[in-house]
Amino acid sequence: MLSRTYNAIIDAFNRLIPEKDFHKISVEMIMETAGVSRSTFYRYFKDKYDVMNANFKNLLDYYVHPEHSSNYRDLCYHIFKYGQENLGIFKNAMSSTGFNSLSNFIYEYSYQTALAITQANRNGEGFTPKEKLQVDIFCNGICAVYKNMVDQRYEIDASDAADALYEMMPESLKHYWWK
Image (cartoon, rainbow, N blue to C red):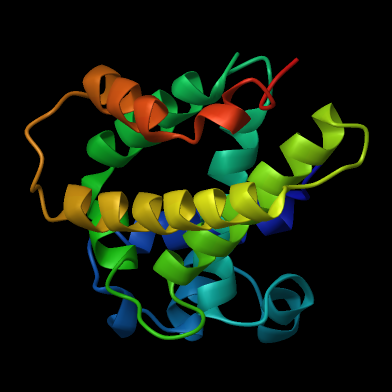
């Protein structure tokens, strides 16, 4: 269970990001909007990148749960739909660059989530070398999809996007996502 203060900081970031480019948001702005002190902010987060990435982590963790998604296609649907409905958040957050960028975080966290689900469903065994390559390409592709989505390069609804993304998932992994 996340603390009220943690959620207040995330909520403050979510109030700022639709209106401001990520680079123009400061830790001070987040602290002021959340009504927390500097020491309280740093008790929960390293910097504004950490807040932004925690935001996506919370979203993915929410939709990965079996109560919300029964398979990978459902997960793609929910994430794509959320992105379309919250385009301002994604557009401004995707403007971040570098090692701590949202795009890099989406890749890393998606890959680690795919590995964890696969290990859980294979009694602790991870990817084969071939699957590691396939998942690496797939997770990098998901990052490109989100960048293009925020640039509104797709004229596709969330359901059709989820079907297309699911079809591209490596066949050998489709049945390992949920039992």
